[in-house]
Image (cartoon, rainbow, N blue to C red; front, side, top):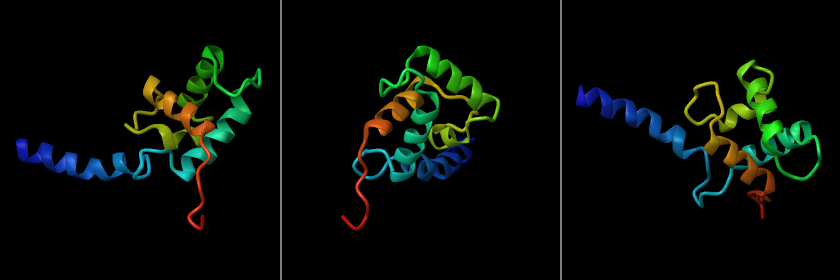
Length: 101
């Protein structure tokens, strides 16, 4: 049982690590997705998602209508929890450098 758990953890660890780049900053893919999410869901254009906008995003994602948010669903449970929403907010404000810079 312990070996099975360790094997599963070993398979899961790379996907969790890839959610952010080595510096702990959002990846380029996350920045792009977050900006698209903000463009669609930030109804009052204040540069962040407010409670009602988050509720709409969560509902749309659960219904399969917000594919951009999948990159933030780290635990792959088809819902966005508070930490995943916080990552979206952080990524939306981030300026990810291109590899050539």
